[in-house]
Length: 150
Image 1 (cartoon, rainbow, N blue to C red):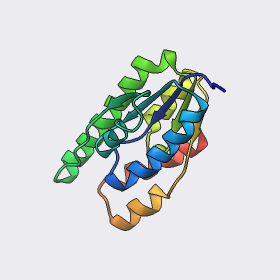
Image 2 (image 1 turned 90 degrees about the horizontal axis):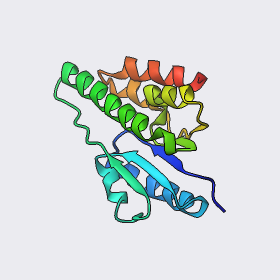
Image 3 (image 1 turned 30 degrees about the vertical axis):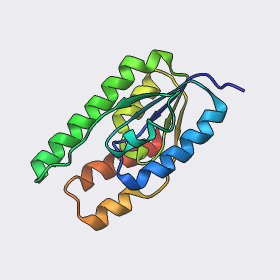
Image 4 (image 1 turned 120 degrees about the vertical axis):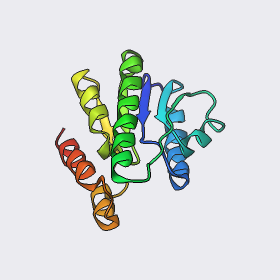
């Protein structure tokens, strides 16, 4: 059974997100032999387990103050969307797991290109950002709320 080529996009991951990503990739591995994964940071640990998939790795550093955090966040979002633009012609379906609700530019691109999308909501990014008093909380919450309606 083959579903065509599947694209999976995550914001660069923490170590704790590698196991859920690998679990998803294990399921995808049974559905198709053609998958493209855009991830980074600890997400690169999945490369060794799924050598038949194509990985695009993006590295994200948070920053030490509100300005550098905002700049690095915007730069990472831009890098992800540029990779998607370059590779989107070959993708039949985009999946946004693990923080996918904050990838508004990526989801918007997939919708503009008329590709089917799946957003897997594994946690409440809005809730976590509010309680951590993160400097990017208002931006992330704004992105998530728009993304829920796309």
